[in-house]
Length: 472
Image (cartoon, rainbow, N blue to C red; front, top):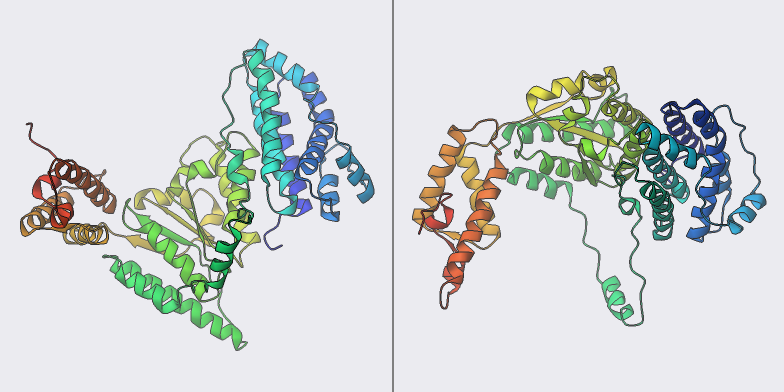
């Protein structure tokens, strides 16, 4: 399956994460014991996962199982029939012996090694669950069961620490609900309906043209699409093509349409055959960075896997390089991201976005970033007229009308909002906030009427638009 993690990559991620955790153990005796016993513990967990999933092991499972070893420990060479027997005979989850000493060390020194080990266990089990490129509900249940069992031991001894920030449910591969005799006819009717065709290149370009403002960005997108189209035509005619990076930097303030344009670009790239799926996966620092060394690499790799075939959009990307601490985990996310871009350069586009003045810090955080991100799109603030256009569009799409008086008030409001903007100016976000508050005030007003008609249900008055209501 395209985008699958290999056994070699699984070994690398496992070995690096376990080694990184081992280096953080201050007690030498515990560190040595962990080094000896971690591999057998995690192998047993893998057996439990696969038994709970109910799937029959394949040679790929054997490759994954044999990859569960760290440097200094012997590599495995289990055979297929041996693994099948081990999976069938899994006795149930048992906390590792070293976990007792780990909790004892935490109790004496006030550290949180045991809690962090639960995080490590959760991530490693998710890694093993991905042997068949998906995480089932049953596997997620087993992961939670193991984490809960370890957490309960920590709770009994009053050890500090909180629940792991990772939500196992986020990694479950969702499947359609099975058909029942009652629902089967409806499902069959749906199958008879033709699937909605994907938007054509022309339709997507029309959507781009319909966006308010952003004239320079629109021109840049069209130029980029033309460049890619011609490049593909040259390739089809066996003509040489210069190197081309499709990864982009979006610079601009919040609310200027960066996510909307990124979503359109993903679909445009799909329409011209550059990407296989055309989906947009949107994250920020919290979606990539985790709590300790090794965990961040796995978390970032999971996000990259979800984005394969489409666009990975990283908002406020500068936050990944926003710490002066050289050990900040944001740097680990950047390194993993660069590796993913290299490994999947044929079917992954990354767009990083953020404030213009802060993105330079991100691009200079790693030498590889500047070479991969060499195209910049600048998103200017919306002026008063454009803000008003966006507001009118929101009203029209949602069935609200403006009188001449309320329209004049809104125009003046947005003109002033733009002219007096500061660092908190939110562009289209400010427009949406005003619209939502106006709708709420209109609802309060209309609800008090005895029998409101259609026009009254649709009308937004000046009083609805006013941000500061006079006291009654």
